[in-house]
Length: 294
Image (cartoon, rainbow, N blue to C red; front, side, top):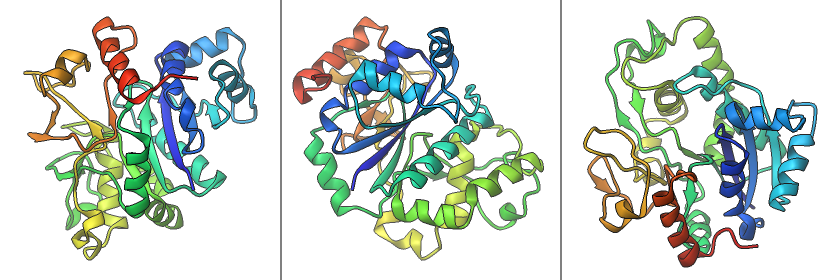
């Protein structure tokens, strides 16, 4: 069984292509589902590439420019403006598309600024022995307006984590069986969910529903459901904001998240393909792990 990469692309065709090429050697490990928006959608439209749900032109084009056969979905369904609920809907859409297409070991939400590092065998071995593990590095978060008078929240807690989560087949099965994505959307249009005062929809909503409604109290006592280091390594500058990842950050051991070192993750971000210093780090990973080689 393979892994599904659920990739949200908004920055253009060149960053998307460079991101995808790192998976060229691993087409037997990953299938890639891409939701396009923003600059990527504009550039595809400029080349008259159709990316609606009833056309495969987008898939054919991306397969052609990358020589990747494992592209399963390249379409536009929702606007993915930063902090918008549409970004969350795009993630739900990708989860559903992958789930409907095949069964996977895990489903990983990424973007074109995420870079896969570590040896591929370490990745495969880890998930072969942790099939039911999710990567939701959640922590309890006190929010007064995130869920406005929602009955779910009367006796339960809000949780927050990075947007870039991974879900196991077991957890996604439960989500689909309970139609959780639809219920979240209905709660939003019924004004049960309002804009969070501390964070974004994609950092709070799905995490809160999964931990309160999909996980049971017994689940939360099991090792596979315990909060664990993120598969996305985050790093912060002195202003507590995400900083573009460069080789300088890497060499000075500045990879931290919640004051924890995260060398056990599998992806890093933000990699800016237009930033010379950031590309130095990409070249380091190329030399160490052989990415972008055809």
